[in-house]
Image 1 (spheres, helix red, strand yellow):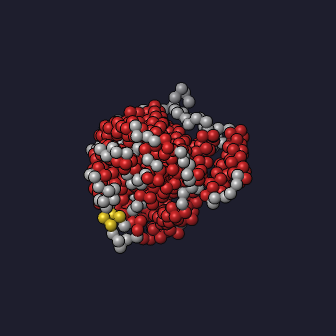
Image 2 (cartoon, one colour; image 1 turned 180 degrees about the horizontal axis):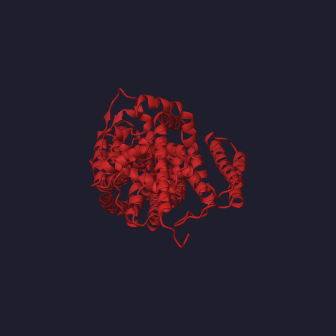
Image 3 (tube, helix red, strand yellow; image 1 turned 120 degrees about the vertical axis):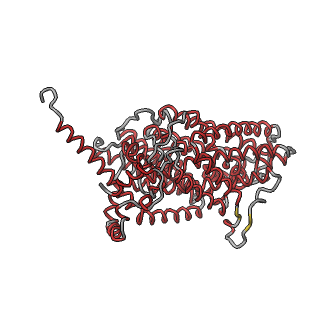
Length: 595
């Protein structure tokens, strides 16, 4: 048996350990000579990984077995719904609303929330079908391995990890700002200014590190316990939001809304791209499918229901804030607290700050649970060291992955400004959601061995056309092309591409338990809006995204490719051995019915 397979068995036998075999058990890393041979085979191995697609059964059984102990199946739709609310309502609404209303969109920030909410809801439907059909901890990483192959899954994996680290860091820094206002200080008073560092990285935040550490300790103890803690905090959080809306509207002044779109349509969409950060977190719920009692029922209710509630609350909160203050007077760091103070309700700012802290605490908790499960499943495939895939036999939680991810989050939170974090986070997330929508189209329209070559080619042509026309629209918008003529070409071209897919390519697979509605229209629209919002993000954020992507590629070519290649071959060898054993058993069995 291959070394990778032995490692898999080792994980099952030993539980949580920490030795060389837990980090680099693959044959390619057994010696420097073996590693040299692996590097010389990079080309053929890369070609193999580019074209290889995982099987659902592999993700559900063989890959999951690499964690040793199983995760506990004790979550219901109630847990998932509150996880969804807790995962989303936090720093986005309480911090970025003020930043975008003041500098980018004005009172039209509510329209920005609607645009982001529509995009998020489309992605929710795509995620839900996958989570029901492939209920594993890997979330979008596992979905992409099955439909788009190993390499695309790795590209997504790197951005998923970046998304969670940056998202957690951003929320932790916002936690510090509201904690300061709760103690009657300015939002930045508790940060340490290091003048020797670059401006965007000079506001050191030790409180954020402490908060992340405490969340980490709680997340490793129990998923069910985290769920109970989450929905208790979320109930309190919803009560505070209700107070903000009711009390805030008593101080409403419609004159503040007269100049509704001071920055025009471009400002609305630019804010939408950043405010997408406020909806990030629902994908963490999909990673809990492996711990859900009845995925077919619980996941659709939990995901779709929590997103609908969240979108409605965001829009009402944004309207309330803009009615309370002129957009130019809104505070960027703690907008709701400062707004109540400005309207003569100084006492209310403490309730707001307390509610914001509650919300951001639940966001950090759900993020910690979700990011660890992503990393666990990525490590199960050996794209990351398999030590990170180990599930503790007593707690039933991925302790190693949780600690490592939250350590990285704490380092980023200690140094990095919120503005940089939110923009970079939006790029990674929109990119991943676009890939999941593409994967859903592939899932519905292509089945290996069943789809004809002609239909496969038509599917590829339609998907490429959808991506190209969406990118053309986003490019025209991002380059600020004047006039409506370019859009009169690109938007109808996208529509024609989707019509061709709908009319000319037969669906090859129907969902077994629950399916996204209006396919191919819904995933095609998700692709278009996600790419369009990407075109509204600033160039510097794309530069940072490019640097991260280059670093991912280097790691993959020198480490991840060879480890995952060995592991894939080991799993295939195990499957073949099982078939051979079954065949031998049948040959030795006595004849039945005289045959």
